[in-house]
Image (cartoon, rainbow, N blue to C red; front, side, top):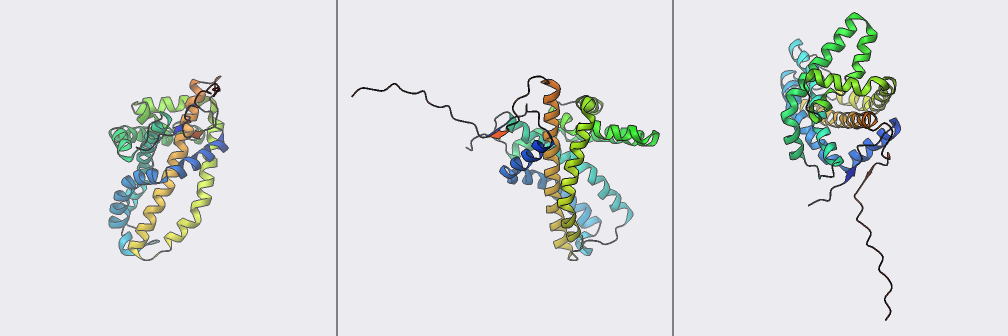
Length: 266
């Protein structure tokens, strides 16, 4: 049986530490993170983008009818929630010293999928309402409710409770949280933009769908992992504001050093 590794979830991580921990954690468990993401992403992308929207037949950059275009837009919101639910379950296992597996993550997160999606719907309605009334409240809500999926899965709260909890974690750290999220988005966009454009230029339908699916799996996994680590960092700041655990991070457990034996006269 593989040895469990320890991820310190009580650390107060700044933006740079979050980026570093995301990359280290992803590198060490890439197969696990990518496999659980693929389980969610591949069927939906194949059905909506590949079959319904004509991706298999027309490849990238083709015109898409209204109905499948709307369905693809809905997927842009739903897929990150499902992927985040799986990633937060894996990260929690690492934080508790358990060996994470895809099966364990699915068993833990899947029953909370409907709650996470419901929390997303409430969150998006609040963002939309804030944008209609005034732009600034909508932007505030956009950041404040960013962690509703993590809360719905880990803390098992309902849709409104998840939003209240997420905004409670962010409320006194809104600017810092917004800046960290923007940094993560900028870094991911810089990395993914040229790859995405290259994939859109592929005219072979099957090759396009395969590349598009893998690309979505990679970007969704990294984004979900970054957001999940930020959620745990905000929770640690909220619950342990004056006793931060060292941000140091992510290390295998250290075997206890045997006690020194007194010298023996021969």
